[in-house]
Length: 115
Image 1 (cartoon, helix red, strand yellow):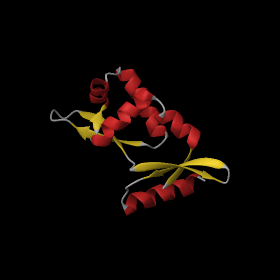
Image 2 (cartoon, rainbow, N blue to C red):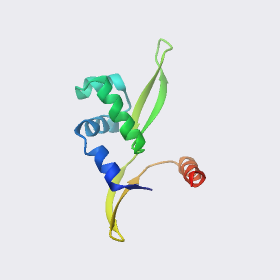
Image 3 (cartoon, one colour):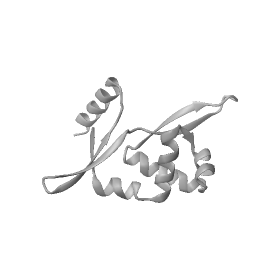
């Protein structure tokens, strides 16, 4: 479970193009070019929204190798759900992930080292 500021997350997912991309990659991982075609967006728009979504840790990026040996990146959603709550007079967004134990430990370790 991650806590993020509500403004940053809502600003990101409040964007129609970001929501289109997030919906597409929640079904299956896709490359930026595929997202541009499926969502009827320009490639620069797709890349800007991908960066916004990555900044909020809502998607992951991984490299795949094509049949011809070339590498390309695919993007996928990395959360199950989000919950907006009011705690101590402040709104919070919790992002729930379906990570395996080693991923959760790595993320916790990274957060501890960053503080």
